[in-house]
Length: 207
Picture 1: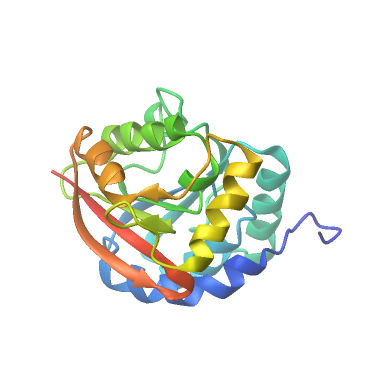
Picture 2: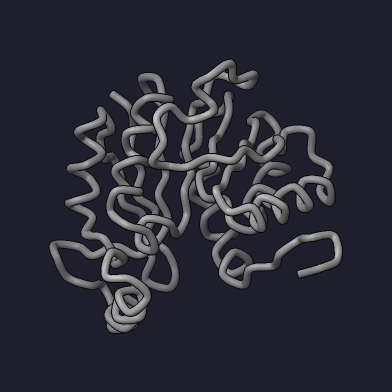
């Protein structure tokens, strides 16, 4: 970590260009993108200047990561990179549902969260996205997924072993189970985009 509290995450530096190639084609053209579990804040620091017509709203539950995100906001100085919010994905309501100044939220973006948290966090994410998105709004999930109950690579098998050693509640999620949870909240799966390093972006749309 630098003295100004910025955290540098190697995974973000590796994946951000590939993610950008999808987002530039699929994000709405206006409104606010709510990023859940923003981590170090580097995604917002990278994406916000590339999407000047959108507001980028980072959020997190972890205080150290919130501090890093705010340091990245100060460093980047982009007007559309909004002040980070403390947000628990399992909460109801989310802070953006109460007197939020940057409505409408037209997209929700989340990277690398649902496999390293209990299933109830994915359920909370889907419920919250279903509440805050209007018809046509989109949810983007980045990370590893099982397909048809099977891993897509041997490295993901090893990764899941590492995850479940951290907690039996963690694990690479089956995309069909994620789709089903999304559908319960009015979010229809519209595209699965293969990404480098055996990851995907799963795109959902509010009906």
